[in-house]
Length: 290
Image (tube, rainbow, N blue to C red):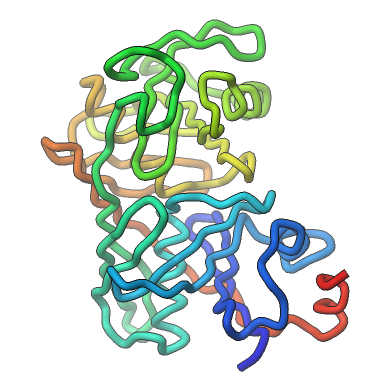
């Protein structure tokens, strides 16, 4: 069908999935911003676009609500998997997806009604090298590095899981506030240390195998949950010796389960939900076309 979209969420982090070949408009940055707008468009934390792939079963391009492109999204991948199964583009429960952040393997877990209610995704290897972020610091690894943001002196762990992350820690027993996230998030995302910007997690250990994070996503701002953020924070926590794997990563939207092996290969498991399927209307398409 022409101009169809699928909307789903992973722990409150919502995406619209589309097949660009069926759309009567191009996914330009301006149009992506219009579609993602929660007042004037459909509303979402981003767009998942089916793409061709010569290396995997499916290809995926991920767009942030500001029109920029992301390399990888854990929640987006789970939603994309449900989209592929729900729209019968595949009847397999195991398949591969190529993203700009690498190829991932995915397994869907069906409910008793036959719907994918959760997914396990092999998210690749975490690295703490500045070149992978990229970061302008001339050090070997970004384990605990000083950074100043919003007038505060902090320490961060820099992690790439196919996309860049800046994890800032408080000690166990303390907590981060939403006000701190809103103050620090934009400054850290756009800090000069990160020429291509970065995702931000404010993290604290809450048990021997659990952490809690608040999330500021590059190009999206505050989000309720993020799969790649959960992977980045979990791998950083294991690297620093704060927790042991597997790690339950708790966020405002809910929990994800991250396994971190000795080589920092990451496996994420979490829920996924379908919200709606619809069609972009002709009047809205005319507006999108300008």
